[in-house]
Length: 281
Image (tube, rainbow, N blue to C red; front, side):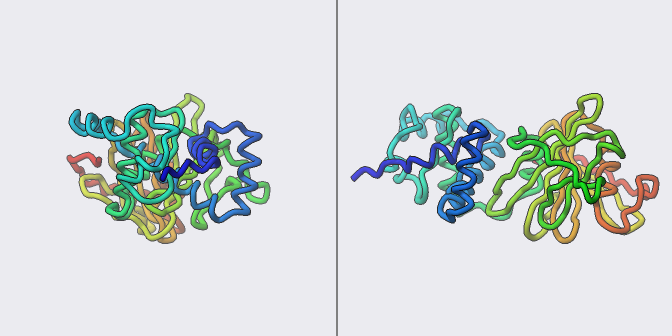
């Protein structure tokens, strides 16, 4: 017996990847606010996209061949019956991706039971991804902040202090954790993403460089792919700033004022860099 795709799932997929037109996005958003079922399905779509974007390495030719043989093409619009041989749960529909990309996403979602806590590099990849929402407005009651927070932590307004203007945002679910990201660009067009991961702080992998501030805050510099990142903990949550064309010194300057009370200014940073050779992945 064939179970057809839920007609709302393609719309939820387009909402998750940012391709849904603004008017439809607003109408669907109102329905999601009233429906726990739609909210759960949207979270699943966002999670699948997050896993796919974090999957940097190309699949081996043998895996690609076996996946393509199993799901066939086109993948979009197939019934759940074929997908059900590999996984349980809601069907995955991701428009504007190749059949192979959809297959890889399906495999990743099938393995979600084996995935553990999200990682700092995964959060950094979201900070390097494309914006799917407009930039949040400045908080009228406190111009040093934006009118957006994550896990109780407000995002900063760096436009006046450092010349970094908020230019976009996105919201993702990574292994059940909400990851809120705001993107900033300076006057020269250099772009960074600032991501805050809800829930307990993530483990910081080795191989990075640590900067200890006089206030006791610890900032850790690292790499993911060809990009640079800095991560720290604030109020028990993990914060990550990442960019492809940015220096470690600028990352420290940006993160310094955001790492919590007692961090102090950039000039208060104690030189305690310990070089690490292994990049993160």
